[in-house]
Every structure is written in structure tokens, then in C-alpha cells.
Image 1 (cartoon, rainbow, N blue to C red):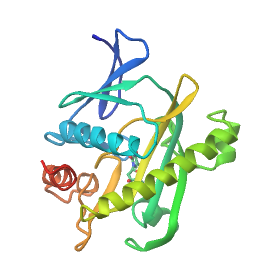
Image 2 (image 1 turned 180 degrees about the horizontal axis):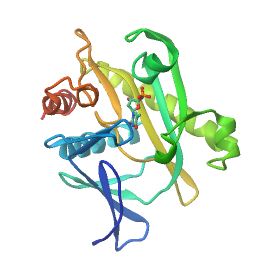
Image 3 (image 1 turned 90 degrees about the vertical axis):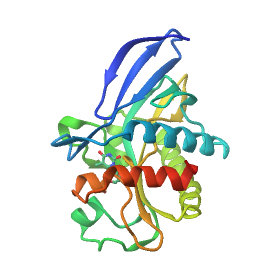
Image 4 (image 1 turned 30 degrees about the vertical axis):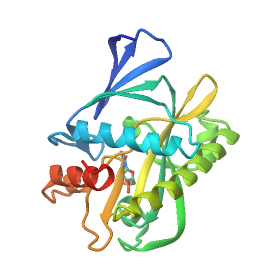
Length: 235
Ligand code: TMP
């Protein structure tokens, strides 16, 4: 298997073709953006931490029967993945009120939700990834109603697995974003699971240990990513 031409460059990753048409390589960058690319910066070693954590978490989820695009960790910044036709829906799971739930609906930050909630966003930078419901997603032809139901069920299952897992590492999984895609007619979990795409708070102090440190200029951004890797992977 050979790394071939770059297919796509996103805000935090590059995607490369390989000599196997069913496989691609995700290369994780240190670039960080927030507010739909308006705020830009670099977080040293972020690409390495996010790749290592994502590989670890995809392996963990696979052990519970969750199907993901993960194939192999190729290098500190590179993940070999099954190629996906990405479904243009960002699925957000929330356990504790934070971020846009606080801004949009007036929840008090830190309020534990009585049950996890699932939200769908249209994956479209030009429109600013707006919130939508299942009917919008189906009408836009992004996925069928059955596929959307499956995706929401998977996200809920992933949340219950990861919430307990992180709590065992003294981290509260506040909320996170998932992306799914199709590989040979099968829906797989794609993208990454990292402090870029999850909110993690320290279990006892609620200290923020994720990209909110960058979004909100809280300082010690690199340390937070390294701390999460250390708690989760012991390295
Ligand atoms: P939000 O509270 O800003 O809607 O974010 C919810 C979760 O989704 C949070 O864990 C961060 C993650 N997220 C992304 O991964 N990418 C994004 O572009 C945004 C806005 C949020």
C-alpha cells in the first residue's frame, strides 16, 4: 500500500489516496481554527495527540461492535482508513450544557442534562454548519430516514460507551461531534475523536481540557491535549 496524491485539505487534516482504492490516509495537522475558520492558530503536537487518541478510541469502540473507518495507525500523524462517502451531517451528543447549547437556548453552563441529547448540523462551511432536524436532512437528500435513525442510534451507543470510559479516566465527556460515511453500502463512523471534537472537563474541578482553551483564549492549550492523552493512554 503506497501513499499517493492529496485528495483534500481540511482545517485540521489532509486526506491522501493510496494504491488501494478502498483505503485513504488521514494526516493530522497542528493547525487549529474556530468560529468557522475566523480564528486561526497552531497547537504544537496537536496532530500527533489527535491521531493517537483517535486511533485508540476507534479501536476501543470497535471492541464494542461499533463499525468505524479505522484500519491502522501508520505513523504519529497518519491513520489508514477505509474510504468513505461522507454523509454531510455532523452529529453532536451532549451530556452537560456547554457551548452553543448555552448560547442558543440559555441553558446554564455545567448543567447535567437528565438524559443525553442528539443534535444534527448540516456539514456546510458556507452556511456555517446550521442546526437542523431529521426532516431537513432527509429533504436535503443527505441520508434516508432509516439511515438517520441508525446514525442517531450509533451516536447514542457511542456516547454511553465513551462517557463511562472517560469517567474512569477522571474526565467528564461534556459533548462531542461525530461524522459518518458510507463504505460499500455500510455506514461507518469516520473523521476523528479528539480534544478538537469533544469537550472534556476534569471530573473534580471542571477544568476545561479541550479545544475550548484555544476558542476562549484560556492558555495552556498544548498542555491540555497532552494531559488528555496521558489520562487516556498513559503516555
Ligand atoms: P457546540 O457547542 O459549539 O455546538 O459544539 C458541540 C461539540 O461539537 C463540541 O464538543 C465541539 C464539537 N465541534 C466540532 O467538532 N466542530 C465544530 O465545528 C463545532 C462548532 C463543534
